[in-house]
Length: 75
Image 1 (cartoon, helix red, strand yellow):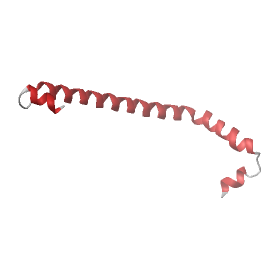
Image 2 (cartoon, one colour):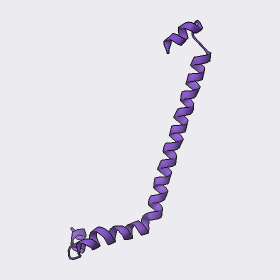
Image 3 (tube, rainbow, N blue to C red):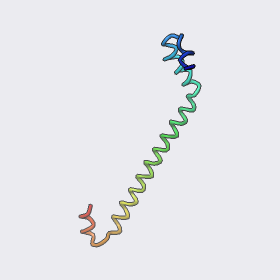
Image 4 (cartoon, helix red, strand yellow):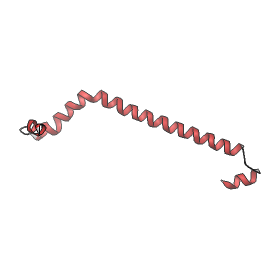
């Protein structure tokens, strides 16, 4: 492999410390924006699920299918 040949003669601290730090500096903005996008997407999905659950709860509470005592015992 060409990748192992390039890094073969270097000390361990260059391979495991310097190279990852350089990659984080170069691609740090891209990584941060991707992580931010994923967190905002998960937050929006959580808000949507909570709103849908609230609507379902309100609809089932105010539109009972029968008498109010039987619909409360279903819960």
